[in-house]
Amino acid sequence: MAQMDETPAFIAVGAGAARREIAVRVREGAGPPVVWLGGFRSDMGATKAMAVDAWAERAGRRFVRFDYTGHGLSGGDFAACTISTWLEDAEAVIAAHAPERPVLIGSSMGGWIACLAARAQLAAGRPAAGLVLIAPALDFTEDLMWDRFPKEVRDTLERDGVWLRQSAYAPEPDPVTMALIADGRRNRLLTGPLDLGCPVHILQGMRDPDVPHPHAFKILDRLPAEGTVLTLIADGDHRLSRPQDIARLIGAVAEMA
Image (tube, rainbow, N blue to C red; front, side, top):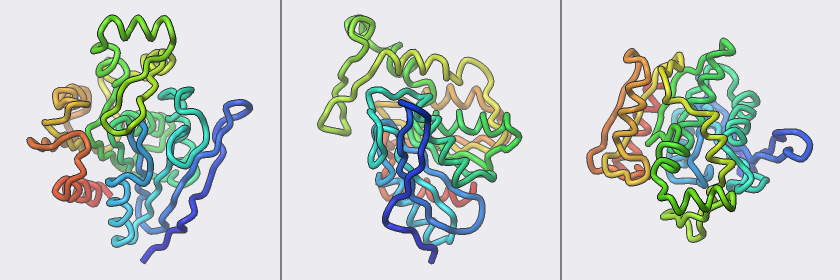
């Protein structure tokens, strides 16, 4: 079986005051490299990432996972980060460990990062082999945050630059910053057609309170019909981490890879 060192490697991203160390784990193997891009405040030890790692071990596939700046084992301050920060992390990891036709798996926010990275790969003449997107939260800072925030939250952000949002996934609140919102606007993908130059398979739960399933329809409308698949799980939540959800994810990844 393909082996993976238990100790993560670290790569330097950024320069000067923005330089930070990003934790990466690489399982060696054959075939197009598979890269995991996690969600907002998640890390590379999350249930779905570990399930894909176990599949990669069984299948002898190369698998790369990492922690964004301010997440997990990586350095940096979460509250100081934006979508551009985490995209820079992802692009550095892909360049270092999966430069040739990667299969990108993006979960929630990671779906947005994966699409941004795939668009850049296509523009550079190095299209991805495919994307598997789990409850993809493209443009979430605008569509799923700002547009839904009540006036008092918007006022707090504009006055203080940060609002602490209670999290359903962690005991401490999420710091949502005005810098995150503003940067998200510069990285929006759903304002026009979105051709990523590769097949895309979206897995979406219809009981997802964080990324409601109509958002997946909006993404579907922007993507080319050819090569695009949407799987709706009627009783699925945002995590999609039940055994049956994991089985669907592994099936989609194996088919794409």
